[in-house]
Amino acid sequence: MFIDIDRIGSRGLELNDRVALDEDLLIEEESYFLDEITYRVQLTREGSKVRARGNLRTLVSLPCAGCLEPYDLKIDSRFDIILFPVELVEMTNASLSSDEMEYIFFEGDRIDLAKILMEQVNLFIPYKPVCSPECKGLCPTCGANLNYESCQCETSTKEMSFLFNKIKR
Image (cartoon, rainbow, N blue to C red; front, side):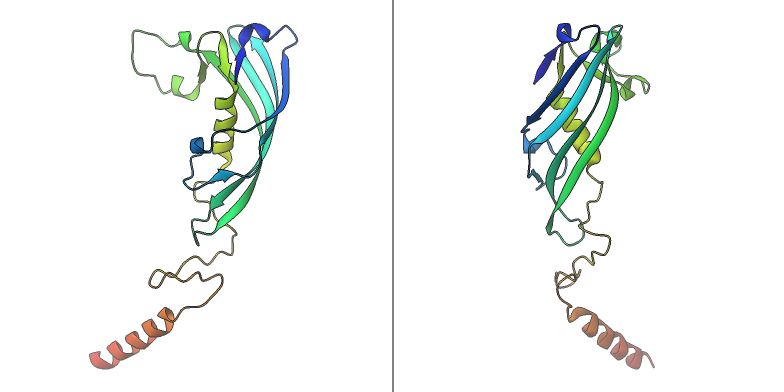
């Protein structure tokens, strides 16, 4: 999904559409899209830079970091980013400075809109996705999902502690 810079006139360019993107680009393993991405993006030129403002909506299935059960995450993200031409980076230095790393670049006369949308989706995904704040997770000993069942590990651990305390005396 490339947008030619020349299409961005003096009033800008507004894009509204739905798109299905590659699930392999989601940062969370075993996650997938449940719906297409619906987006609205307003592109405006600011000298050699391009400003992209907009929003996107989609639904993603993620595995819970606590109980490993899949759950649905509704994404409704607003963004306002400035894209710089890659030519602004000094070609004499192969590495980027810390200031340059904060920029988002485009190459040539085209902007990769799919890359921008996917980046915004990935930014919305939590570092440690959890199905609910009350998620109890899995028992580290037997693997039981503590949201649905209790396990005997806690009882047996208490019994073992009681027995060891008796032996110590």
